[in-house]
Image (cartoon, rainbow, N blue to C red):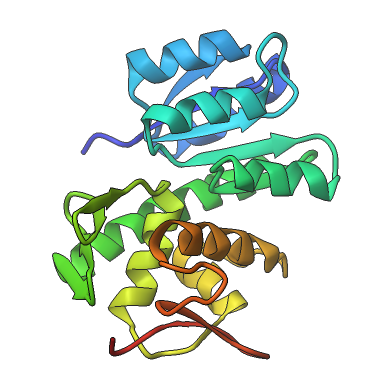
Length: 230
């Protein structure tokens, strides 16, 4: 069975070589790019299943590459940063990145995260209903499309995964840590802001009044739930 294709984008060739070795050992196909322009070209030519994207690239930086990818495609993106600055992490998530890792890291951890993203994505598509209707919101799990009335809503892959999970389990309250485990597929080491950023983006896109949400409800002191009946 053909394994998924991973695009690694980093100007540190030694790191790329190490990541490629570990990914190919797991059976993945690997494409490489060493600057932003090459990365965008490889996305078009190779159609990767996941992009591992460094922030500090020559030419177009990782933020701009992420921004341009998100204009046209919903490929999962894992950002790599050499800095621990929260602003980098938050901005990456704001632009649509699904995950991030701070250098230095163990390549095997990255492999585990990639596998978890792919595994959870497949499990959701197998296990959930094909369509979810609630109020005027329609979620097509096979086509990865969301409509609010007559309007089609553009979501990132992670926003779609989070919305699908919550809607499929309407009425049940999930903590941020549980959502990280169920949607991201691994322990996110307490960085619950990842969930908050994605929830805010979802509300801005699907709620009539994002500041007074009726679909994705905050349960103070606990987490979030999707409203059971409208």
